[in-house]
Image 1 (cartoon, one colour):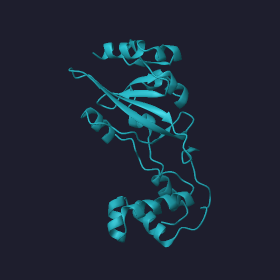
Image 2 (cartoon, one colour):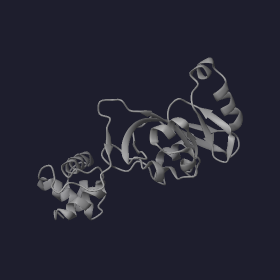
Image 3 (spheres, rainbow, N blue to C red):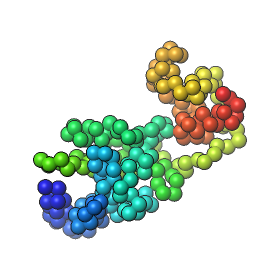
Length: 225
């Protein structure tokens, strides 16, 4: 069924042939192909990458041979714009897809081979038949909106923060260092989860970092915690 589906999807339609869209390969059976003009990859139910197309090779700087067989959350390192982890072993997006629930588009930051974080608008397509073979396709559109960002992932922060952290930001940074979860921070400080996330965003900006772990490391180095 899957082989027939990809054959139909890739070989029918005048527009598909006329645009000459790049092909992608299946892991384990290179005779099967899929076609799309955008960077695309697919994973199986275990989160292993089994499809990777030429557009993905060009966009991410990662070859098909390097990508196939990798765990998606380890290779893509997806985060949201606040530095919160998006990709993980127990991915809710993957779970929804394989439960045959419709997955709406989302905007993660994916890591590229040159150690940069690039934002995408991702659409998912679940491909399945009556057998146990199911795939979750990710079609990645580079986000061209005004708030889209492309930044180098820092290996070390600058010697001093951009500005002094507020008392509340210091409180939250210390709680993060103690591995307190966002919801528990909100309960402890009697503020909303949204307010906690806003403070985290501000303190990460001031410390010139993009991830919570980097903020904790910076806080310790600057003797703020």
